[in-house]
Image (cartoon, rainbow, N blue to C red; front, side, top):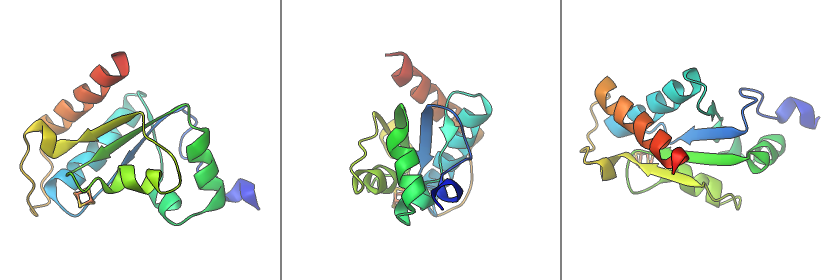
Length: 126
Ligand code: SF4
């Protein structure tokens, strides 16, 4: 039944997905999405449901008023996951483009998270 396969994690029309990758920048992307959701800037959307081609979740993603992708590095797994179902994120953030070096230490730097959150807010206001 479609209703059970919709992403009900957020009712916000502005939604954010994060690559949540296995690196410092991937985890910073995830935490930044959490922070944006907690600040009620954007609803955190379940990207795995899109990647898994769950029909209701792909539809929910398509129905979003504005989609934001936050990726750790230029591979852009989050943006590409949306693009492969023909969703173009209106705002695309790549954390390494903010001058943050990628490493495989799973350390979340709160100051960098704040920079990412501020960057998203700037882009939303532009
Ligand atoms: S965008 Fe980069 S950090 Fe994120 S999941 Fe893909 S390869 Fe990993």
